[in-house]
Image 1 (cartoon, helix red, strand yellow):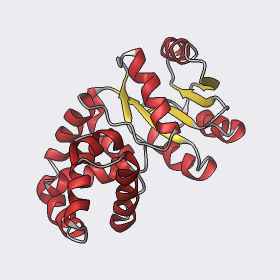
Image 2: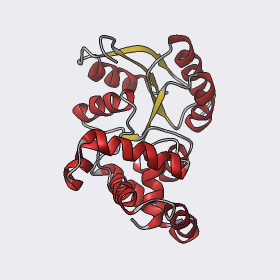
Image 3: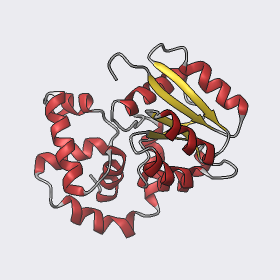
Length: 219
């Protein structure tokens, strides 16, 4: 992203929410709001037309809901990173969105600084896992599926080395590469190499999917 602003599409059917998000994002000179969409269909079209880096995507929208839009964005704008906008009442849909390749999620009452941090992280290729809210929601989402998914997750994780399992466990806690590096006394670059290797071995598309797998496996 060096020298170029992070281009964002805001997709939410509530004009006031879009206006609030735009105001926050445009306060950062490294972020440009390329367009706004009131529904999932327009979000897909605008993300394709503007070749954006990040899409902030509400799940509950008319014409095309967020989950359907997320699936279409993977083809229409494959380079765009999608951050889901949600409430605690949409837990099951959030899990589905993360499993379908969403780069993370934000609650609609997220603090402005965290919103900017999430957009920057997504644009840099990282999933945004809030150390507080995300960890809580992931725990709640996976609780009901733990028995069904746990065995499969443990089988997949068994292919990892001991150190790789340690790194995966820290992803499940929501740590960044830098945070995991500090915990394991590694450089951030070394952790990044481990993460890439882990994603390839597990067949995960991104860190969020790996984090969910770590939780299922009990790491």
